[in-house]
Amino acid sequence: MDDSHLSSAAHRSFVSDSFALPKFPDTIEWRTGAKMGRFAGVDYLLVDSLLSEQELLVRQTARQFVDDEVLPVVREAYNQGAFPRKLVSQLGELGFLGANLEGYGCAGMSNVEYGLIMQELERADSGVRSFVSVQGALVMYPILQYGSDAQKEKWLPRLQSGEAIGCFGLTEPDFGSNPSGMRTRAEKRNGEWLLNGEKTWITNGSVAEIAVVWARTSEGIRGFLVEKGTKGYSTSDIHGKLSMRCSVTSSLHFSDCVIPAENQLPCAKGIKAALACLSQARHGIGWGVIGAAMDCYETARTYTLTRKQFDDKPLAGHQLVQEKLVWMITEISKAQLLALHVGRLKDSGKADAAHISMLKRNNVAMALECARISRDLLGANGIMDEYPIMRHLCNLETVKTYEGTDHIHALVIGERITGIPAYR
Image (cartoon, rainbow, N blue to C red; front, top):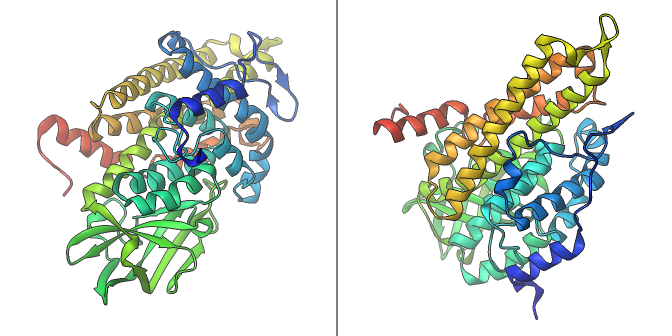
């Protein structure tokens, strides 16, 4: 049987057989250097009791992968400003690329299972989660949803396995929050498309074999597949980033770039098609940032229990420190419940863009504040790279504004509750 069309059941069996649920101690062991031992989770409200055995297994698979494979390399990768490419094939083998999609080798997981994977990956680094989110939600999803059978068969199995990497070209130098104002144009000429324009702030841009690019045409905004090496297509990386350093970020340039007619996504019509892809990615972000918040909280909790100050008393024994820890665990718990409910709504076909906007907006703000509080609790140590907090803090500043800024999501929610669009 062609393994590019493995059933969901086969992939679930693979995950179950590959990873047994390990038993973790009740407390986290403090380690010099890496600082943390096995992650036992953050679950004050017993949210795990709301998860199925399969969901717990998927999360534990992702958690073990992060502990064993991602955390040992992510600090150096961030400092060097490089994405750890060796993880890509492993992510594919585990079924994490396009995990919540069906067919063509995809795992066919639920949106809750997908969210739990994003949570664990972002516990390591937002850049790692972003790679997986872009590959699945912004490249594989539009090909599956809007592509031809030939496009699906050519690209989806390769993208799922990690053999090929993709990127999503929507944002432009002059148009971020207002994608409908895009200037990139595609014109029909002799049965082909001639593409001109520029996209920027594109995750995976220079390493992608295939780019899903949105352009204005005489028929409205349409989606195209632009293959690496196409004449007139070039990329350049964005350097000097102080955030999302463990992620490749690029600009895409199109100068009389000839796109074959068969590379147009036949069902991708209008800006709503592009925004539907963003909703898929934003759902993953809403889950992912919980992982970053958990890592910051657990680092701060463990640090304040071991660091002694004033009469040899642990920092955690002071009222002001406990108040900060209580705020974090309360907000993390609320974010977990929000993510789980939106995930359940999405699995039942009831979640819409406004629901996902609330998830993304609330949870990113929560995670960013947890990072700031945790940095404060660690004092000067909070800025050192041997602890993960400053890395999370810098990353989350970007996550707050990409794929819909905090303010844009507020306006999406505002329109939903008032019926009045206030974007202008």
